Amino acid sequence: MTDQPSLGGPPPQSSVDPQVPHPARIYDYLLGGKDHYTADRAAAEETIRRAPQVRESARANRAWMRRAVRYLAGRGVRQFLDIGTGIPTSPNLHEVAQEASPDCRVVYADNDPVVLAHARALLSSTPQGRTAYVQADVRRPDEILTAPELWSTLDRDRPVALMLSAILHFVRDEEDPGGIVAALRDALPPGSYLALSHTTNDIQPERAANAAAVYGERRAAALMVPRPLDRVTAFFDGFDVVEPGVVQLPRWHPDGPVPPRLLDEVWLYGGVGRLHDG
Ligand SMILES: C[S@@+](CC[C@H](N)C(=O)[O-])C[C@H]1O[C@@H](n2cnc3c(N)ncnc32)[C@H](O)[C@@H]1O
Image 1 (cartoon, rainbow, N blue to C red):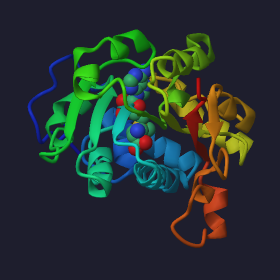
Image 2: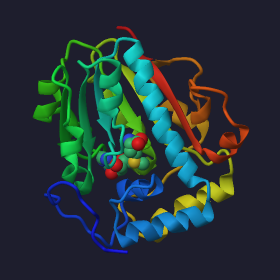
Image 3: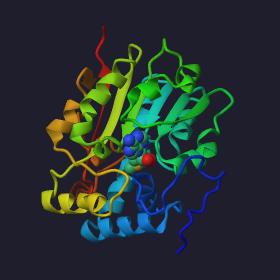
Image 4: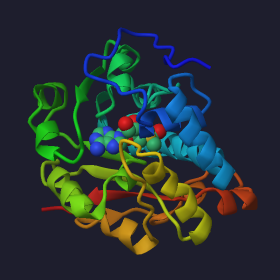
């Protein structure tokens, strides 16, 4: 075990505190990646001890992201704003989108400097498409919306898919996650979409609450706030949610039969909505 992440890119340009577990690195550990410090691994292991299926949840979330991107590309969306990108994990969002259509453009945003250090892997666009990376915090949506990279990469006149995959449960109620989504929504061009996934404690309330508590107990960079179905659905205010609605991730446009055990093990909801016309 080392206290250095094995970074493939340049060193992070803003400060990383290896003593403070960070959601991006905990998630990377859960997905079997290699970019995490001792404190991240300890927090992840404690979460696994309390909720052994959490790795399955992480994999299911990543698989849902891929299905949602393919679904959106299939409806003609060619532009994506992915906030809370995560440490690159192949295939990354732009790779999924550009496999569907090589001209897709993707702007990534995350607040973990370790993700920034890996931005090179996120910038490997096809020649026909484009990608950009913005170091930013979703709790300050204006910083994302006014970042020069955003509208120099994406066309303001064409639909954008706003991707909020497994990030809003790191925003506390006092930080107004609904207001954040509304601010981002109001900047989207007509015909845009929201794709959002979010942890819940509806499935196994006590175990989910106990596992989420690790973030507070370990003084992680963000707390984990699981929310019930009605609260997750409320984030789609101003959008028409597409079939099958906001559902447990394995139920959302599955690639094949859903093993029943996944419905016990995946404690996240997700959905896709299309911005109301007018
Ligand atoms: C669980 S990972 C999800 C990664 C990816 N979206 C996916 O679904 O596979 C959550 C990501 O959100 C980022 N994040 C958490 N809080 C954030 C914030 N306030 N602003 C920007 N990014 C944040 C973390 O750094 C991490 O990369």
